[in-house]
Image 1 (cartoon, rainbow, N blue to C red):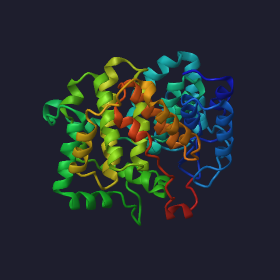
Image 2: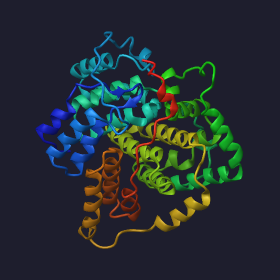
Image 3: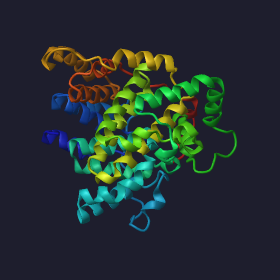
Image 4: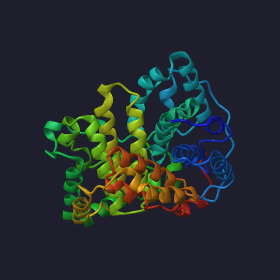
Length: 399
């Protein structure tokens, strides 16, 4: 992606910590990538950057960068997985490794170990890395690698069955409909189980859960659901093992966008779209033989996040949306629909909530890539709002 020296300076900025008020992610560089990709004027992007650093949509400003605490090495970096400490030290580590090995080798060597933790920080570490690779910025890529270590929460792809033992689904949407049917058959029990799993206990936290996640609510639910797991999450469908990876990416975009339209504007489901774009960007930098592992990590992690919501969309609704959108395409040349896209883009430029220009950016890319599938144009207009913080934020951060 092309970008100006002004944009490069923003992406190279090291003034702020990667999180604020405990575990809230610093999204500002994600917004820079999206706004730049949508054609925003550099001055508009600078203004957004400065405004966000002063006051985010959560009502807090960003926090200053923290100094490195330790010199992290190849012998010690794994001890930092999910420990939420020494982000600057991790950046220094990957900075040195990139200078020694080059970025391609750093990605090949370290990312496969990080992929199971892609849901950590509510997918924002993965978004940081993937969107950095999208715009091809070195320092943001270093930050993304460090953040994936910092926030690592495993989705346990090793629990996934072999395709021989899994369902005979032939597509991602067929798998979603099968899982929705299972929820329909036992919705009350599954909902109660998911709610119990995601409830922060009064006493000690379960093993492997960082105390800061208990302040989050949402991130705690994700971490607990990924740790607990469910057979529906780990039953590897046939298509995941047999279809061409290029086709699987497109199937996933369609299926997850359908999930989003089942609950339009849902803050959680929107992240599954922007992180899917990130995972694909990451996959493009890795050897072909890792593609199915990446896709398995995404599939298991994505289902864990949806299960953590404790309310899978009904099969009837998903099937009706699929019937409406499976063959729907915007007729005529792409130029015919540019006025619609310009309106969505213009709306996104006025949004303080940076997830909305990111949504438009990803959906517009998919619309062009699929020669005008209507689902992506429709989803691009379903904006989200910043959720209210839970009462746990009345307590100070754990670190």
